[in-house]
Image 1 (cartoon, rainbow, N blue to C red):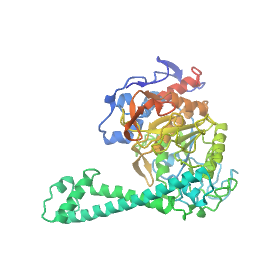
Image 2 (cartoon, rainbow, N blue to C red):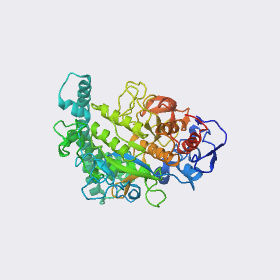
Image 3 (cartoon, helix red, strand yellow):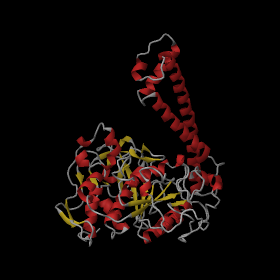
Length: 540
């Protein structure tokens, strides 16, 4: 398996900031060869926490070469401040690793109840909350179903999927609850037998008893502990499943539920814009996703705590528009427009859905972003789907046709193990509708109340690329959004590996066929190419 880079070899005597007197970067892009032996069987905890920043050739981990880029290229160089709009579930703006990188609207006087900067939003100090007090919402298919059968193909498709998902959620809740009750009961029996509430798998295996109930409990726990870990870990995983399916049945798939009533607007009227508030964090319990995304992009670097974001010289503008459930098209469109109007040069969208009844509003907003030279980075989605056949919005084309605009980059997720397992099993893919892949499995980043967690999804891959884009725009401010997009795509590492697709060992395809670029995003190479493009040494 070869790791390739598309630029010509040879030292690139090129500078970092065109016209700014910066010293040339006399470096070659990564273009060495890797083999299947690069696949790692085990990592240290430190490697797990930072694998997305690792370098494939140095560390044998398919990261984005972030550390290498800072050490070899960005060291002792200065860039311009870049604002990244994060359209998500809300962000803990007081997090120890984020508070110094949260955007502040200097033209607004905090707390005076006046729209000082005349942008249509009162006291929008750090962004805007388009959800108000709402946290939970229906899936879009549920909204379509509860409107009634209008004879459309959209309704028929939504109804079939709604019925399937509802049935699956009911079965899932029942199964997880049943297993939890069994594990909890067995735990009580074993604790009594051992005389302690602290035990491990070996303790379980050493149990001998004439009591059939004890033997049964021990066998049940041995089965689950050998697969998951401690009883505490088993219960935590089961509780997560119970919460997930309960939320689906109570909110996402419940036609009787309407989370929008607390917002006070008409979500199907794009001209009804007087809603929301400036509480960009929202409920901390629902801000985990957005806080994690923000940390991946721009958590304070080298401050000795937590983790490092990809991008320095970056401020995070917070746009709360993604609930537990499916986002409204109107909120997304208005959030994109807010970001553009208030100075963002990159927007991260780690969200998506299969139905967009008002997609024209989002298309118009993306076109507006393109006209104002703003790059939109979008997560490809986590349904293991081939997006050249399945729909996932927002996108930048229809029916696999030509792109409407050239400022949208869609990102699939990589796993940490180079070789056949390097594409995350959950990641969507597509030669037309996915542009590039980036680290998205077991990503360590910020979560509310000064915590840090491992999360995974294309939601984690997109902000890695958004951070790359912010850095490129920081050090090469004359490059357009379109140029930054193509630099990221073309400068990545290619691979001739055949990889497992959609988590199915029987479905192996060339990595090069899973995205438009066929590559893994690489910051080190992207900066070298950006420097050359900015100096007009090459054209995209």
